[in-house]
Length: 111
Length: 111
Image 1 (cartoon, rainbow over the protein chains, first blue to last red):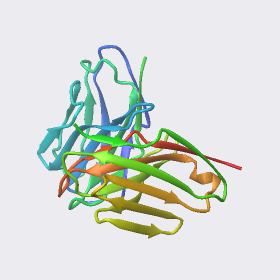
Image 2 (tube, rainbow over the protein chains, first blue to last red):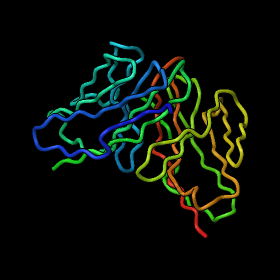
Image 3 (cartoon, rainbow over the protein chains, first blue to last red):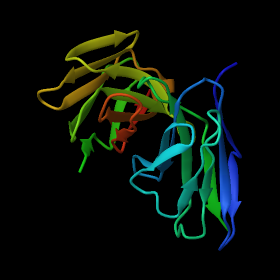
């Protein structure tokens, strides 16, 4: 059945390491988004993509990178330049400006 | 900048009615969304308002006044499972544009 999947559920990052969070959707949605959630804060936009091979920075893009080579996939890389990566990462998708639907999230922890 | 305000925490009794308010001041407006988020899980869509007035969906209703920059989510016949965070989010433009989120209201339902 259709939906958005994120993997892994938990991810551990060592100092100086780049890690990649996976987001896949089979809803045929054009747009995909990455948000970060910290305790006591709302969701903040990292990157979004409205179409394949195109993406835009959000409010907190520094230290992150993305790619959108396929409609179904929008992976997020947390680079070593992101000094405070511990957070809950949520991927979402939408079509025609309608409701955004979220994946189950990945919790990133620093060792 | 974008500003979306909602109370941080609320407590209500099982079987009662609770109203969660959201005020917004944003550079654009193309609709307001309410999401429910249980601890450690992804947000799930509850309601969408783009025109003034009340939208009712079972035990949940949402109201919008665009002239006042104000919305509320009304939960009736509260159940213990309604204990969650409720997120108010504004779409700034048409099409597949990212949402701007408030910090969320954590609702505790007590017996």
